[in-house]
Picture 1 (cartoon, rainbow, N blue to C red):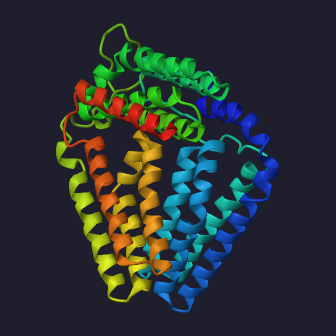
Picture 2: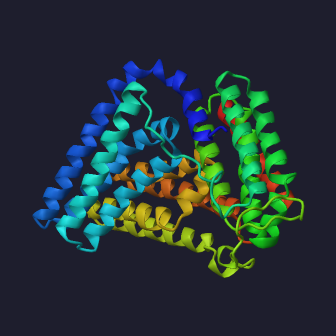
Picture 3: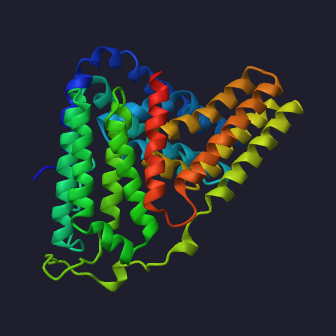
Length: 395
């Protein structure tokens, strides 16, 4: 029985072992830099310089940790990368909420320990033991039929990554298609998801498969393939507990308690991404106005707050990353560039141009995430968008 996390790490290990010398001269200093900034954060907070402490931890993320996110996703898992990324935002929020120094220090210590834990993986290729194991294959609240379907998806996606690493892009894409149809559609997992969860949830999984099919057909996207595969598997694993089977001959052998089955209509609980985008754009404009008024220091802090409090905390960043990790990286880069432009004292016109481009891409993100049930036609259009965008990147 194959566990995809292990398969993914095995297939990618060979690629990165040849880079171990390079990594040892780059990743270790980055980790040390972050640790020093985190220590400075605690020191500033202890001295009651809360704004400086928040600024220090935020810059540790923007200036340093962003360079580690991709390697952590590939060598360990997307969840580990996201968990560590979120810790920076949590430390920042705790400082803003004036939490006790001991609590802030405890979270800083956790993040430093996590950095030390991943360092040998990045520097020397040593894998973490039992990191991010799937538990979908052993949970009592997941029907045996869905466990078998998940295993099919897991195995085929592992084969896709192996073929992609070998440069067999069309074969890799075919394996993803097989995982989509054999594991998700033909097993009637998609049908049950639509009937017992929501059409929006089913459309989201379909979107991720479509994105991955297009992505694996293109070279030079191993990082993005890794991120999207691990996120897709995690999203599928998250929807399986309590999911009813569709036919009597599908083996259940697992309790399907009504407590585990969400209501089919969850529309009222869905995030209004257009509203989130409006908030981001307004906050960016307010920060630029503050910068124009001569307060660059706090304007930079406002940009960083917008990233953590709106883009990340709303779940928008993670949702976009699960569908198109390259686009997520593009959006993140706007915040980094705005901060860099402010630090360099650049004209307001350059900031406005950057903000305008961010606004346009955020609107694309709203369209991607959708504001209601998505049709097969919208999925087709989304897949074509990915193919066209990848084609332009190669030109």
